[in-house]
Image (cartoon, rainbow, N blue to C red; front, side, top):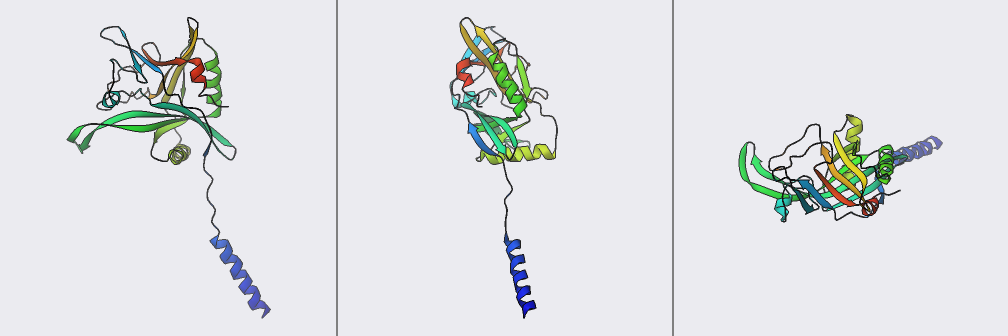
Length: 238
């Protein structure tokens, strides 16, 4: 009888252990900056030699419509920096909402015209790179500085799921990313300003049909976003 009771207790214990489910820990957003929603986009037109100003887009001409903006990779609706963490592991993420577009094809067969759409991009950077970024913003040297993202991507509806997926992919298939964030901090007259360009693949100089960007130099001589240092600094959490 005792043996039967012991067997029943063991079976209940084993069943209980077998039914226990544990979820893997994932990165979660633990802090977010306010969103930067306005910056002047400047680009020197190669033909006329004149500077062209636009709101939140870098383009060789004045652009106004949603469709026009979608032809230029350097554009944004807002920019934000978030801090993510899992256990003792942390990263910072530069997130921006932008307008993109594409032509519709089936194989090599052209189906329809240009379709603009909004998408969310993210650049994940290590804490060491982020602290260097913060420090360099404070020095108004006017020197162009760039850093490579740890990894980067385009998000679907659930941003944090995509961020976790890209970090896991980076760990499984480690390779150097070529996506670069370029900026400088300087004083112009009596104003402290920050100039920057959003993440871009300068090594492969990727080209997509329908995209008009021509400036891929790793400097801010002929194209950049410009905002006051005070406004840009609101992005810098921690």
